[in-house]
Figure 1 (cartoon, rainbow, N blue to C red):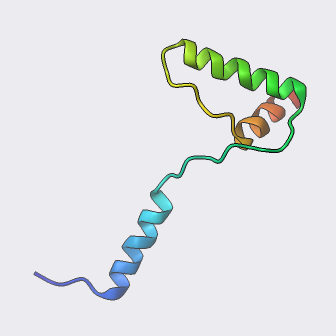
Figure 2 (cartoon, one colour):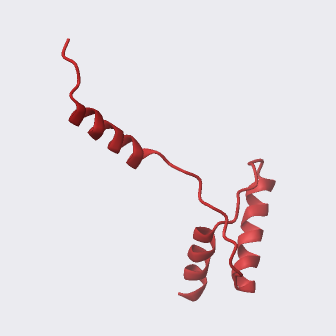
Length: 70
């Protein structure tokens, strides 16, 4: 059985870091009223479907804004 070299271990660690998912941080900046309304409605609909209510993040607001503006 061959032992792993330090370089192999570092590479595996780098791969794990790239593949690990961290939760998105909630957005604390003010949002547009229309974007906020759509995000809240979507979160409520997800919760009404039996799933835990998701956090409305900066990414949610950005994606919603892009959908509304196009």
